[in-house]
Each structure stands twice: as structure tokens, then as C-alpha cells.
Image (cartoon, rainbow, N blue to C red; front, side, top):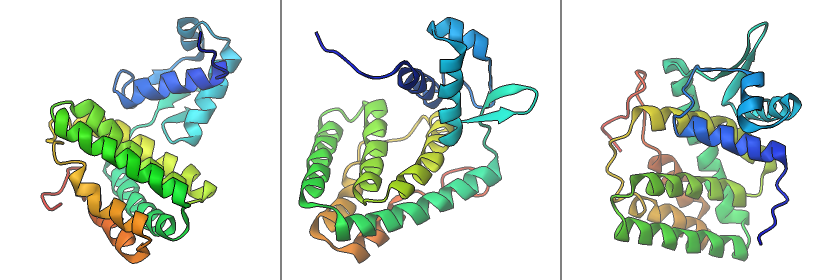
Length: 216
């Protein structure tokens, strides 16, 4: 029997986050503590702590006198999130190239091989490919060595994931892994300048209207 030490709060956070990111809980939807507590069979205090954590991740807001609500993302929000992501990921890639340990770089290379294999063998599994795409970016942030950057990145990453999952469901992701190859190679070889440039170039531009640009 596998024993997990994950707290009830952590399980509630993961459940709510997943349901928001997958679109089961919609952007802008009101969240009621008592209803969630009953649904998850948890105390209201545990649900409240979980919701507070999701506020820190940028997925939930607490509105005075009206309770909790999933974040809504307008055109200006999306524009800002995109540019913040470009800035953070560029710096994180350069930092990872300079300072990540040999073990962390090996971990990145191994993960990328799994990602390539998935795209090669299951090119139609867009959900799993998309998950590994996001996980790759998160891993680069993780191995860059900055706890503050990891915290800030979550506030950008999760709202963007929720928006993109909701509005862009027809991607061709079969070439997803290969588009990251130069970035991963630059980090693993310690080439900070190329890693910085590749990280920024890898993020698909968005227009003011919240659409993906035709230029990649």
C-alpha cells in the first residue's frame, strides 16, 4: 500500500487547481466555501486555506462582501501576463544555464527525451503533450535556483494555462518538443546568452486581442 503524507489542504488545492486549469470550473465562476466543503467532504477552514493558496497563484480572487471567484482574464491582463512570462522565462533560462547543477541539467535532458518520445509516438495526445510542454517550462524555472522567481512564475503560469486551455483547443502539437530543443541544449551546455534568446523566442506572441500571433 502506498502511503501519502499529502495534507488535506494540499489535496484540495490540487483538486481545485486542476479543475480550473482543465475548464471544469470556469473563469469568473463564483466559488462557495460551504458548497465546496460539502462536495470535497472537508471542513470550511481547510477549503478556505486552499482558496487562499489559489489566490497567491493568481487563479482565484477574494471579493469583499461577495466571497471567492475564479479569476477573469481580459485583453489587458493577457497582454501583461505574456510580457511578464517572456521576461521571467528568459532570465530563468540564462540563470539555469549558468548555475544549475549537473544533476539538474541531466534531469532536464532526461525529461526532454521523454517529451520527444511522447510527441513521436503519441502525436495525437494533445492533452498530455500540452502538460509536458508546461512542465518543461516549470522545470527550467525550478532549476534556475531562484525561489522568488518560482513564486512569481506561478502567478503568471496558472492564469495563462487556464485561459489557453479554454480558448485554444485546436493546436497541432506534434512538433512541440522539437521547438524546445535549442533551448534545452543551450541550458545543458551552459550557453546563457543562447538560452535567454531561445526562451524568449519559444513563447508564442499574443496580440492585444488575446489571439496567438501568426509569427512564431
